[in-house]
Length: 358
Image (tube, rainbow, N blue to C red; front, side):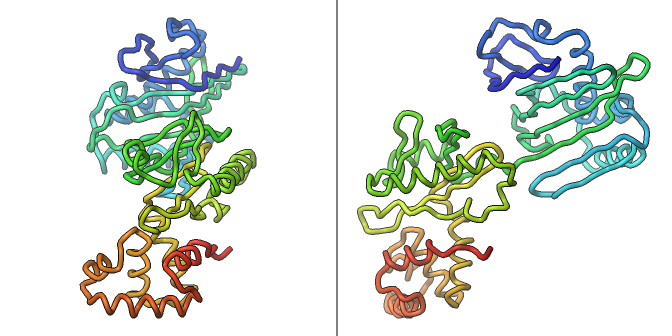
């Protein structure tokens, strides 16, 4: 029988304990963990918890005892930093675990740091399939793990004992950085925003949240903005990987501020959500580098454009670059000539309209 619990939360003080971490079921907060899962399912989860706890406690023997130590065992790890790594057979898997524990010895109680969400279990005969999201609930610079893992484990029951035979770990792109970011779900509704977005959005003249929807403040541009959101919503219904579609990182223009400086945001598909960022310096630099190559801008001209689109006026750009104001104006005229524009607004529109190759 399959058990699925979407939308799990882990509020502080919840009385519902998983074998690892804390969880809360919105529909019935009084439900206890043992009332949700059968004894068979609990025995499967205990193996998973024991293996995870042993890994973070540098207890190789206990970890190894949870695995089916045959050549059919498999461990696959995939993430943006390391690509895809596959270990086949217990000899290779065990060696990898030993090397990890030697390279970065840890001795932590995983129950204090990790929370399982969205747990799903399916048992058929002597085979068990388990999926869950593993979330880092407590920050510690010495505790080595990513803030979110999507984990799938397959277990085989041998002589009445469950053992892990396959482990697949997927680490998504980092959820939040210092750039203001707003997350939308597969329906286009706002579901989260980081602290930078909460503070900046009050003064940012390009975007606003009304109810559970994100809008462009400029009414004339909002229809186009909503169309971009709907485009990403449609994309989430496909089976394509987000990185395959370059337009998912296309800058979206939001008009100008009171000082005629261009406003824009970036809309990406990240895992199962839509990410909207603004004041995104790294994305802007990446886009300008692409446009600069297309228009054959020199390094100094590329930097001038970057500072201009980041919101500085010409005097501020001159101070930042350590040159005379007249030099900046001369460089800007040459940039106008190369791009076929005649104003800062037109230049911004031109550069942000460039599409990446492919």
